[in-house]
Length: 263
Ligand code: OOG
Ligand code: MG
Image (cartoon, rainbow, N blue to C red; front, side, top):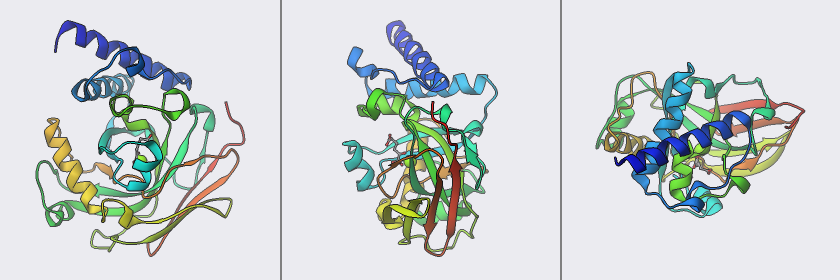
């Protein structure tokens, strides 16, 4: 990487890391000057590297834009991925402090826990054979960009908007999650309805894609890692002081509460 490019990576990484820590939106980095996808992933690596230097550890990978609902909501058509770290994992059923976020949204996902490493081109059967357990999950996303607007390189640099995740009860890996109805709601009022089939036709395909993309970037999905398959529905803005619950057919529910106070 050229010195100039290296400088862009470090500058963007600092900007995005500060924005996340201060819960303050920043202008899209691509407005200032265009950068390509490899540079975007290098920025993401540097952003997460700063968090790891402060004591967080890597716990897995998230997939983004694996459903049409998400692609349509955000106006993009490329699959992306991001890095999950220990500071993002929140307690199921707990209270989430909204003051740490800028404009948080929540979306229903499936989470896979791996029992062995996975990388490269694998079949859905091979991917499933590496799964220890799977669970209904909620991802909290929070773009560090103003108005939650970005280009694909922008959102990749911003670690795919990832902010936090809450994972429900684990189920056996052979549990059929191909087409499960789901309802995401606030205080019992439905906000989004959908099916796990919206995730690439079957959520296991998100794990197949994660293994391929990891290898393309010189990474491996490790035993013990959590892999988030991507939102099955559009994301919904998180209200303050609300009970947030997603009920998934045959998997049960995953829930948390939001604090009463915003920024
Ligand atoms: C980007 C993150 C996409 C998903 O599940 O599709 C994502 C965003 O929507 O801001 O997490
Ligand atoms: Mg997501």
